[in-house]
Image (cartoon, rainbow, N blue to C red; front, side, top):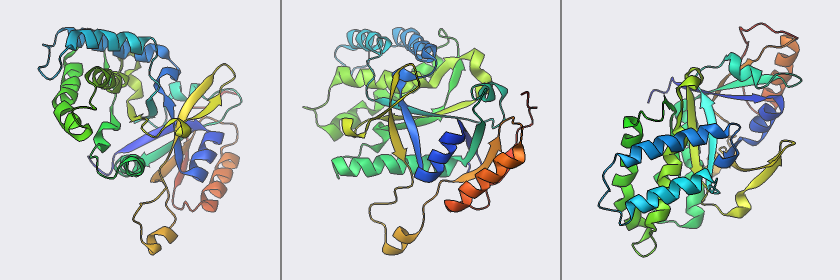
Amino acid sequence: MSGHQTLCHYTDLTGLTGIIRSGAFWATNLAFLNDKSELLHGLDCAKEALQLMPSPVQFDEWDQDVTAAIEQLKEQVIDDIFTVSFCRNPDLLSQWRGYGGKTQGVSLVFDQQQLVAMFEGFVKRELIILNDTLPLEKFYLINNEVTYTEPEQTPKFKDKIQIFIDEYETYEKAIGPDEANQSGYVQYMISQVAPFFKHSGFREEEEYRIVITNIFGNDKIQFRNNGKTIIPYIPATLTGGKKDATEEEKKEKIILPLREIKVGPCEDFMQVKKGIEMLLRANGYFGVKITSSSIPYRG
């Protein structure tokens, strides 16, 4: 993975302020995505793909477990899966429309390699709290490009599912054969792959997702409301530092690998830019480019 690749996160000025001040992203529960059809599309892909796969020898009740898992996920029994979305394009009209009206949109452009490493560090810190010996980090954080496809086009889905099937023995050894739950693993496996498949009509988004499995307990889950419903999320604080940090490292302010902030179409770019510059300086961010969208403002 090239360190020059970037990931863009669209938010509004309130979200920007929160991310800069806290160093955290809000990973939203999978059942509370803005568009529920996204999840259903991924599950339709799962159904098509898994029906064409032979039953793996590692699983005793494959057909039954797969059917039950897809039905449970369609009923939104996904309390433990949380996601953060990014995309490649920092100046996308469809995203700016999502922050229209009275809300000023911004796109935060991050170094991909460094940002993903910080998410991995967040999960590892939480795993250490639970158990210092289980090598399970990779089972609790998945990050990848979203695949845009039709439900009946299944080869890529089968390939991704096969990775999890191949990893089951490793998982079973780490957990212990008596603790491993095959049907639970099948549901987990599908819930980790389905979020990475969307309908081909959304291809322009070039979305990249980070999916986190909640192993941290209910006390880590927080809640917000959007005026219509209560939305569960986990604040993934990326600037928490290493557990074994030296005294010198602890004194050093940890910041996000932010490279650029693109301001969406607005009436007064210079005023918005000035406020962002002051916010960044106050929180130890220097050298971040602040640029304006190329899309004209329509007030």
